[in-house]
Length: 321
Image (cartoon, rainbow, N blue to C red; front, side):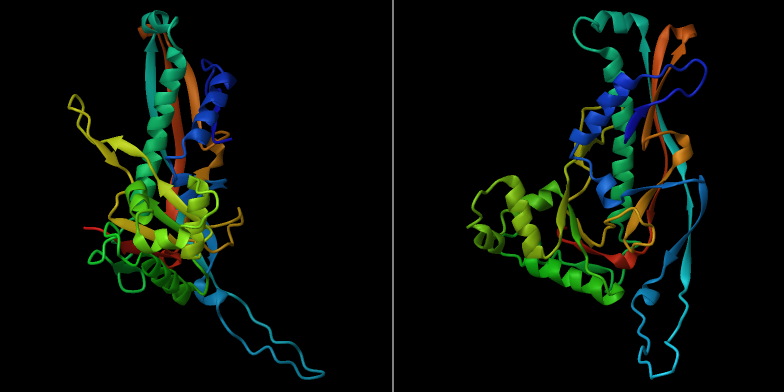
């Protein structure tokens, strides 16, 4: 369960009702894609080393021919060590008794406080995922990065399909495996659905819903799914007029191999490693009493490392200035 309320000390109260509400919130918050781009994987230790299969071993060819009476060919495989270190992230929202009483007849102030704490941790996870995946320091050089801004996606005549297929080819050439997802922000997606060639190819979709159109375009890109980040955040300083900014900008698009299972041996771009000892669920929400301030405090926290395992399982494109 992604969100849960647990008892963290002798003064904390279990709140399963808020736990269900927060889980519902996360399930409905399809604007957030961190859990899809870097899927969660539980680890028993806060920090340590993971054993991963190397790309070279997955694609190594050996002579398998056997003569009568002769033994079969044999071999060993090499693994790579991947170190990780989960860090704790969290936020608290105190709720004064007087404020809670004042709002009681209008809405649940306690649920609102828990939601705000929960969403701020979730939002921070999202921004860090974007920073990890849309990273021109990690993805550099011809095998990992392509600059397509001279033929931007905002131009209706650009060959978006060709650019995505070229990126898929780079992943296959580097790893021997196909990319299965395209990751982009909402503005890039709007450019995709306004592209002349793409519109011509999907014009005969029988029931043109958002889902069927997305599936049709995924088929054109020859991937299993298109992942669209729709989240925004307020980038203004405290006390200033709100300035809403897309978390996933229009400038970059990633074509990536994402894991399909919980098997750590499965080759992929990366995962979010979650320290399981910190409680059930990725984001844990707690409540405790602060009597000196006559307040209940709602806390959301998580212990994770958002880790790129192997950058060659993705190809980053710059698609706008």
